[in-house]
Structures are given as C-alpha cells and as structure tokens.
Image 1 (cartoon, chains in turn cyan, green, yellow, red):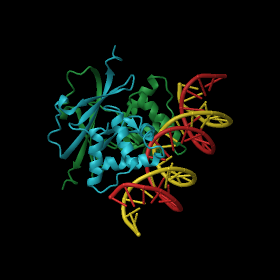
Image 2 (tube, chains in turn yellow, orange, green, red):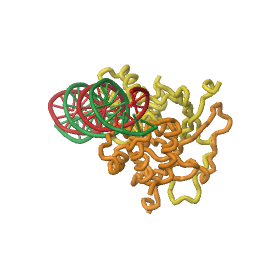
Image 3 (cartoon, protein in one colour):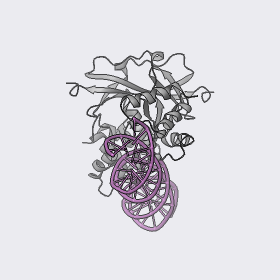
Image 4 (cartoon, helix red, strand yellow):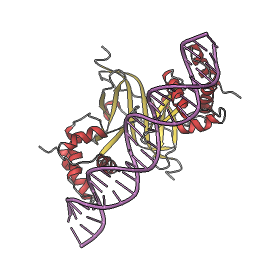
Amino acid sequence: MVERAVVQGENKLLEKNYRLTPQRKAVLQALTQAGKGAHCTVEEIYLIARENCSQLGLATVYRTLELLTRLSIVQCLVLEDGRARYEIKRNPEHHHLICLECGRIQEIEDDQLLPVYPQNVSFHILSASIHFFGLCRSCAN
Amino acid sequence: MVERAVVQGENKLLEKNYRLTPQRKAVLQALTQAGKGAHCTVEEIYLIARENCSQLGLATVYRTLELLTRLSIVQCLVLEDGRARYEIKRNPEHHHLICLECGRIQEIEDDQLLPVYPQNVSFHILSASIHFFGLCRSCAN
DNA sequence: GTAGGTGCAAATTATTTGCACATGT
DNA sequence: ACATGTGCAAATAATTTGCACCTAC
C-alpha cells in the first residue's frame, strides 16, 4: 500500500515539473516506510530505499533529499553529532525531545507547548526548531 | 587585558586537574576575544588562537574544544550546515535567531521568551536549544 | 528528441586518531 | 620524573561534484 505522504510528495514534484523517477519514488517511500519519528540518516534512507530500487546510488539520495528539502516535502534535522537526519514534513509542525542517555528521539507537537515566540525583538520569525534535552521515561527509571 | 571568562575557564581546568597549557589559554582567549554572539567554527577559532600561540595545531583545537565542552565551559552549536560552532557558556542561557537571508545569528535570552516547556509529557527535560529562523532587521527591509 | 536525472568514482570538507616528542605540575 | 598534552600526518566519515550515460516526459 502506498502511503498518502508518498502520493503528496510525488504530486508536489510533478507540479513543479520535476521528473518522477523510480529513485525519487523510492526515497519518498523509504521516508514514509520508516514511519513517524524515524529521523533517518542519509545512509539509513539509502539502505531502505535500495530495497525498492536496487541500482540506486548514494549520491542520488543526497541529491534527492536536497531537492525534497527545497520543496518543503521533507525537513532536515541536524543533531549534536553533526549528521543530517530527514523526516517527512508534517502539519502541525513538531519539535524534538532527545534523550541524553539512550539517544532516542521523541516528538512533540507545536500546540502541545503553546509556543510563545519572542516579543520585542527586531527579527521576523518564520519558524522554530526546538530541541529539548533530558531523560526519556525509561532512562529516568 | 584578560577577560573574566578566560580566568573562569582557566580556574575550572585547574580545579579538575587539567593542565593549563598555552594552547588551552589561547583557545579560551580566542573564544572570548571573538566576543558575544560570535559562534565561531573550529577553523575560525584556530586562526584567532594561533595569533597568540603560533605553533598551535588544528587537532589540538578540536581536542581542547571537546574538553571545554565536557567541562561545560563552552557549548557547541550545530546549525543546518552541519559544522560545529562554539561559544563560551553563559548564564542565563540563550537561544538563537538565525537569518535565512544573510545567515547572521542573533541571540535571545531565555527569559525574553517566557520559555514554555511542554506539559504532560513523560520526559524529564533538562535543557532546551531553540533556533528561530526568519529575517533579521536589515534583511526584512 | 532532449533536458533533466543518475551512477560511479574521485574530490572536498570536517573531524578523529596514532604515535613520537614535548612540557606543566 | 612522568603523566598528560601536543603537533603532525595519516585515517575516517560525511557530503559534493564531474562526467558519460540514461530515461521520463
């Protein structure tokens, strides 16, 4: 079964006159297949996507993710380890709870934290990326 | 004139029985010399620090920054470009306003944004890193 | 048919590591 | 004196790029 997010992504590509190649389909498929809260590295996406598109090259995955990011189909998350992670962009926006003990990443939706954006700042805020660090339930005992 | 932050950093090193080498002094000095809101890359810190310690090697800068981070003397900031940036840790904590147009980074203190940490989440939050993206005053026209 | 996309291998960039030598305490 | 630190060069890891070939439209 083809996920809704895949179809939406494919449509966005077509709308902007980008070609719908098996490689792009496979990357989109991999991102949704990994599921919510997956935050896959490029390498991980590559490995999953190759199952549906065996001749896929790693460089193509990088190029595809760059394109999908530019089209706001996916979003990039860079954690302290400096490696890029990607996830399908969703609405409403969400933020991340990163466990300092086990490294697991949970998600939290924007409206669960009544985002109070700064006042009296001469800066026009368009979006926010919030990383909370702490201990997840099981690591906190 | 030697900055207060340098002296504090040096004392923290001594307290924990780390040696106070010219290399470590130079890195601390470079970080404070760059000033508030500098967010220097490792390479930049290396270039500044070398002015006071000519035989300094880049690997030592990496090792020193890793140590200073571990001792909470500095903090590491990883932006979307994936390169590590470092700044002296201050109190109160602050967050970042990143201009999407010119890339300049402003700072905002924690208490200026009534930090609203999530409620009803089974996660023990210890700290937060908030990146706001948008347009700085001059780029917004 | 052709512009746009891809695979591969080589290049680049950021960071880490091994090891012989140097130095702060 | 000696553990700790350092410089250098080589290793590793992540990402980017050049180019000949391929394919979705």
